[in-house]
Length: 333
Image (cartoon, rainbow, N blue to C red; front, side, top):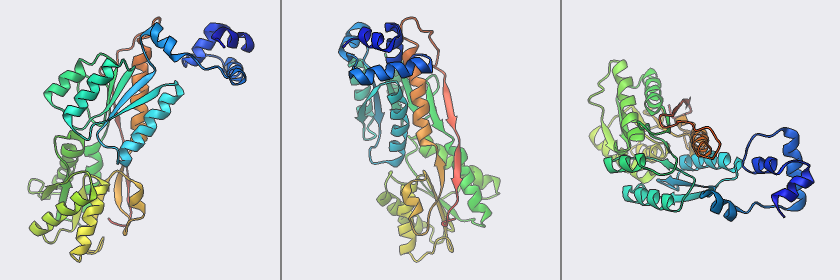
């Protein structure tokens, strides 16, 4: 079965079938006729032949720092949903937040001629920046704002600033903070600054904010909260950089005999399923992760398709999308 035979059955041109298969513009009527013809014939495009002809494969590489993460899963869902519409497959690279592994995946994916790459970035070194800027295929960053590269990121500072302000409005003044490594500018540095800006705006001591650093898991959040309680035995508010860290912190607070929210308020960032079943349920800042993935995929596809022969090229090197957030106030505040 060939494109010509599908076109003959559908009563359209071969070019129309080709546009249909590549996600090009077509009338609704032609799309329906071609779709019926493909269903009837069981036609499948010869991807190998297309690769030999164009030098490209319809595969997008996705590099992620963690796999046991609800936020990563949501971003992946958004990416895959958009790519599926254009008949792209995905190749996953798991870096475990290791810089050298990210660089290895970037190199391997380019060598294997993927159509483009989406990198869920955490940290940025000078060598990584140079590698990203010299990437030979279209590249989009998620989760971090990087100059000179297309990226989709969140208003991390604004989200945590509003969370902290709401906690202060509840009368909390002895607020402590559990963050993550500030090499991760978005989840680390920006979220800590957000807490301090809210404290400063309320006339509280921002520079003396008691802080501890945790990894992205509940056990580390528990241990960080224990260290904070040893230094500051009577906090009345706890802001955590992530929800999973907050769940660990809640366990430590309860073990020290503190009631939530009667004695101490607590909040995190992320809005995952566990927030709704914890006791008490957790107040959080919801980041639009699925939309983040979808936006990144749309930008990448526009870059890829802009390089196809006959298509108008679009400069997306400075394309930035900053997403908003929502505050989900539950029982822990």
